[in-house]
Length: 119
Image (cartoon, rainbow, N blue to C red; front, top):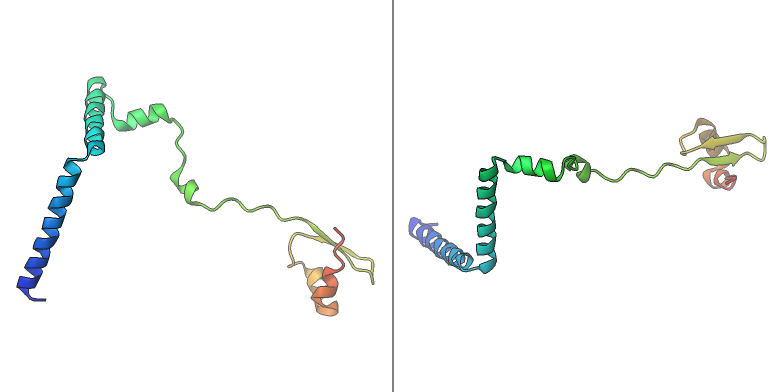
């Protein structure tokens, strides 16, 4: 891009931003917000408080921002009981990674062992 084209592009962007700024200056909601901020800061100065002090007064135990971002806790696993009809042996487990259960699945097949689920 030539320097002249770059200059004109920047000039157009500046004009657009200036128009947006003028529109914001005439926005009544922005004026009200700026007035509120000014009055709030004056009030804080009158009483010698900072925003941090006010937040501490209003919400003494703020929510940890790190805990908000975390996923919700996992639902606890349900204990499953399997009963081997061949040997009568019973296995209770919360997951499928139990040694005896794995051995049964290797010997009899996963579908067959799942049919032994007691609860």
